[in-house]
Amino acid sequence: MFQSNLDLIGTGEGYSTNKRRLLEKSVFESDRFESKVGRNVRSCYRMMKVRVYRNLNKPEYFSILSMEKENKGRVVGYARSVLLENCNFVVYETARQKVLRDKVRNVHSFCEGVIADASELVQVLSGTEKVVTYNPYKMGTFYCREKGLPHLSSCNEAILQGSNVYITE
Image (cartoon, rainbow, N blue to C red; front, side, top):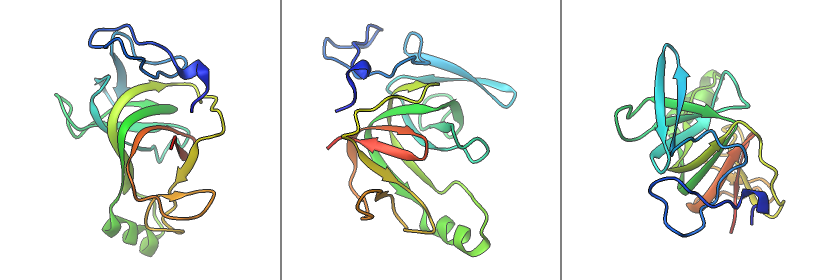
């Protein structure tokens, strides 16, 4: 489980009485946050379907790409920590092969899911999480850092921060 300081109860609209896990110092206000992306200001909504990937220019940040609403297919925000629910791990093999051939980075892997929260802070975790990562030069899939084995399954909840994905089993 994640450390108890992450177990907060959501109070915004659309929340049930069930506990919802949130991050410390959330960027969400009233179930949405705005970010300046280039010259535009875009909104990210809590429980929106998104794709999240490491920002190639600022590796300490993740880019959040909307998969629905008015900015579908566009980056709607950035965060150091992102909490996703119902995650799938995706790697585009053709683009990975281009990275291997040309030795030039490109976005070809991401976590897809529903955004539950995001934060500018790196979260303190309990240490019991399974650590999953991705390196195109080591493996063609996301893999368990500890065992070095492919991680092909989806997960119910994950925190993305640093160069890793932290999931509970």
